[in-house]
Image 1 (cartoon, rainbow, N blue to C red):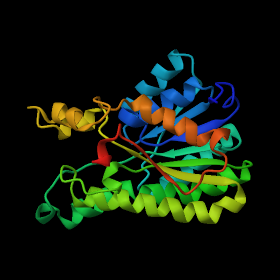
Image 2: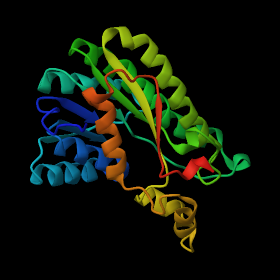
Image 3: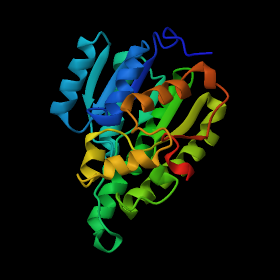
Image 4: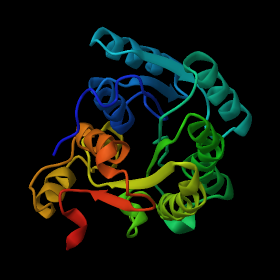
Length: 255
């Protein structure tokens, strides 16, 4: 069986951190399946460009700027989504930052900055978005963690690793509490994916090729790979799936 491209007609999705990279890939994929997509980011200029590109491609896409680390801005974001679209069916919490540093070099401010976006931001959006999805008749939340949520990431640092483990724990708790209200909550752990962020972590002298050699499928992921996983977890094909974590890494973490 496959997901019908008409299944998402009439559904509204919100994707955070969607101005570029994996978030943009998720938004593009949801839009291609007929979803009305609200793209969110803190970078207003890039967000506007992304929304315009997806609209030009034939999608119904709206950009709403907000900082997910600020609960007041998150509340206003979801209020606007409800006012404009009458509800919400799919929420993808993708917004995250990386501030690479060795453990001894992480300042209290640096630790707090990463946590405020990567973990607090997911909490703010879940705590505001889950009730809205429930009021809308049920739906799906997909939290984007990382393979760093399954094992340590020396490249990204202890604060990033800790935040991504936290996303998986939060996912399970929200799934337990909101299952009876018709809201499914799952997490995705992307592996090495071709994005600007990943390029920034590469040393420019072979890290990417080494990573490909370590991936059984012998390629880096594409943002659309993560987008298709989101579509699957948000579709009726996975209507009995909640509280789980899907690793999308080409087999990178099996070794």
